Image (cartoon, rainbow, N blue to C red; front, side, top):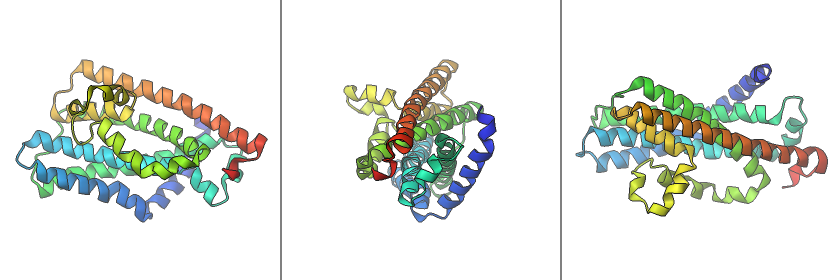
Length: 261
């Protein structure tokens, strides 16, 4: 079923990617902001050893990925409403989620540049030997994590459209995920009651597995558990997204109130 929509996905991906590449805000969120975080963290941990450097590089990259996902995917549909094209897109034969999938995939792939930039900063500027001890496992986890991030984005897009008040807190929504997912420091430093909130976020499992793979401590058991949790949460996110898209289309085709939010 999905294969017949590949052309539409690619078209949405291409258009959105080219738009984001020229968007100053997304360049800041994808490259500059993670580099600022990495620069501060690398400077503070300069004498702590290479393991800390890898932790910072991966964490800063994931922070950029989350920021791009939050703003890019969160506004994937809302931006169409702002330009007056949302009703036209909702009425197309191509399902709305297909178009949003292409746009979300574009923002996710663009955000991978933040991880590369953080690695280069730690290596070229601070001299950290930022190798990846388990490259195959690292690639597997990263691939699974991208799928889950896209699922997360598909859930955010209709949620932001149905409740515009959420957008007032977009900036504030960045930092709880940074903290709960252990991007820049271990979640073990947090109070015990915050642990369940970390477990329901797929970026937490992605960050944990990537950091272990880069440091060479990722066991086969941990790889299985982390990837299973990432995929399970991705399926849950997709289920929630399907429900939200159904509500969006109901507002568009039955209530005719989609553009009045």
